[in-house]
Length: 145
Image (cartoon, rainbow, N blue to C red; front, side, top):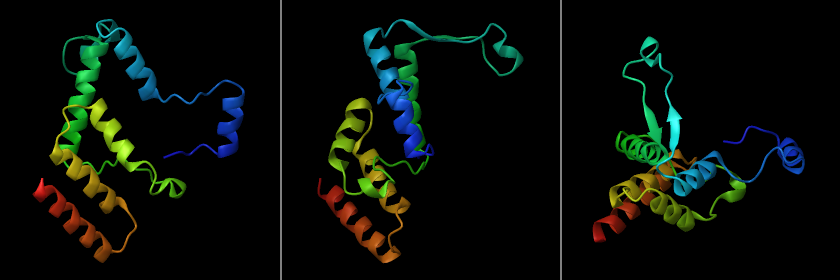
C-alpha cells in the first residue's frame, strides 16, 4: 500500500532523498555481497524487555529467518499475494512476480503457489460466483500437475 501522495514521491525522488530501490532490494544486495557479515546485533540488555539471550545475526542468518517466516505465514493462512492492489497494475506482470518470488524464496512449493494464487482471488473485489469459478479452475490446473 502506498500512502504517500504521488507529488511527494516525485518531489522526494527528484531531490535524491528517495530512490527506486525498496528496503528489500537493499537487504538482498547486502545479503548477497557479504552473507557472513554481521547484520543485526541485539543490545546486551535484551533480557530486560524480551526473552532469550542477545544475538548477533549475519545477513545469511537474517535471510534464512525471513524466508522461513514467509513460508510459515503462508502456511498459517496469511492472505499474501504477489499481485498489486493498484488498479493501474491489474493484469500486469503476474507471471514475472511469481518467478521473482520463487527465485527469491526457493523453499516455496507448489502448495505455496496455489495459496498465493487463491489469495489473489480471495483479496479481490470480484463477485463470489466469479471467484468460485477461478478457484475451480485453479484446483483443476494444480490437480493435473
